[in-house]
Length: 200
Ligand SMILES: C[S@@+](CC[C@H](N)C(=O)[O-])C[C@H]1O[C@@H](n2cnc3c(N)ncnc32)[C@H](O)[C@@H]1O
Image 1 (spheres, rainbow, N blue to C red):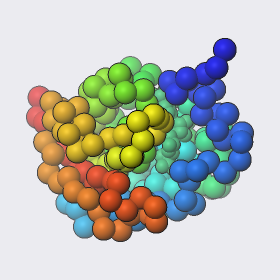
Image 2: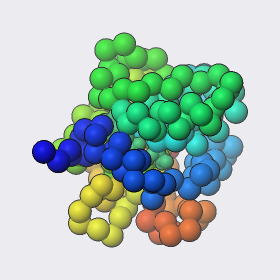
Image 3: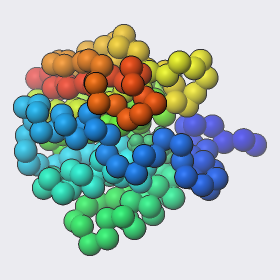
């Protein structure tokens, strides 16, 4: 039976094929810039869901955040651990949808990069609710969302309307725009979002 994108075996198979097509070997420039420019907490606990090889997680750890990076593909977590070396960072091989029980309210900041477009579309509402649950009151979400020009996924196309529809029930969206510094090939296909969890 063929694995589906909701299962770790699907993603592990992509890693097993060699260099995953999404990996650029560095943090996404719009996220790196936003961490300096946006009014985010400069310290605290940060979560990177669907971290892959963890370039954003490593960037956050270098900036001094206490980072938890999560991915359910063993090769992703092995790749992150190899890159992290002695850098203090928690790399969890785990389904992000299982985090609600033990990590509720545990994070000041979520940094999302091509994770929302990787999960099955029918779980998007659940994902947005979970990110809010994992954040402390008035915690922050910084995301770079991928608007593909393809009908099939993953990556599953994420429009501005998709971001607003799923996150607005839980977050105030303070910024949502097309970045001008996307990786080559992703120009005009990304949405950079800054959100703050609504007070209860
Ligand atoms: C397109 S890749 C992006 C990786 C990384 N964020 C990046 O931009 O380089 C999506 C990642 O999300 C992971 N993923 C998808 N669904 C997941 C889930 N339910 N729990 C944990 N990881 C998941 C996959 O294993 C894969 O590594």
